[in-house]
Amino acid sequence: MRARGLTRRFGELVAVDHVDLDVPARRVYGFLGPNGSGKSTTIRMLCGLLTPSDGQIEVLGLQIPAQADALRPHIGYMTQRFSLFEDLTVRENLEFLAAIQGVPKSRTKRRIDELVDQYHFADRQKQLAGTLSGGQKQRLALAGAVIHEPELLFLDEPTSAVDPESRRDFWEKLFELADLGTTLLVSTHLMDEAERCHRLAILDRGRLVADGTPGELTAALAGRTFLIDTADPRRAQRTLVDVPGVLGVAQVGTSLRVLAGDDKGMVQRMDEALAAAGQHAGVAPAAANLEDVFVAATRGGVAGAGDREREHAA
Image (cartoon, rainbow, N blue to C red):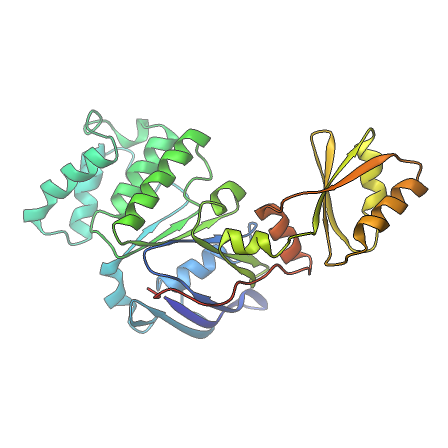
């Protein structure tokens, strides 16, 4: 999958602003960003549900949106909210989805049996979907999204309303799909989910501000993250936010986590500022995480965008 100059305007609002994407095949590719960053709008354009204001999209060798109808049999789409019929049973929902996705009748029963087994619904086939737990509903929605065995699966913040254990189980299913050859695009605002992706793009106010593997993105911040150990972290935080070059200061337990610009003099400046304020503190380097990457990318200290080399694109 490739996109060049992808743009979407709603009146005066530019929701997606000249985004370039290269999505590798058979991988989990994430879109990380806060609400309103353009993640959902981007996904809707990529799968042909929304016409771009400008730019080019190629998905599975097809030009989108011109060939969106030809693309639809090859993609699955899972929304953030549970969108199946709550007054139908688990199996009835899957039968309905098989019919509308064009699964051959000769294949339908066998395919549903496979999904019921894979997604752990063997003892719940006759249970109404509306009585399932949040995690079970998401598993059912995922089973429905792949009932026609799509080559490409779009997931729009699929686990934002489920518990951590259900989220972990859900992600295991996503990796199983990738292992079987499916390409997955997942939008999220959760850092722990973004860390699971093979590759991800960070969007902010409609713009692509970073792109790479989690390892590439965190490595680009080497030497720019610090832990501050102090007896009065709240007071130290107020001091550090005014130090030139500091991009962000967050309290983590009894310590402070500082993200700084690419300046070798940062440790000395922080030490001097804390000493001038009469605060005793220890400053130590810390390994960067994706939250640091996100802060750096969205506050102007853009993290490395990767080397732009791509695997075979979907």
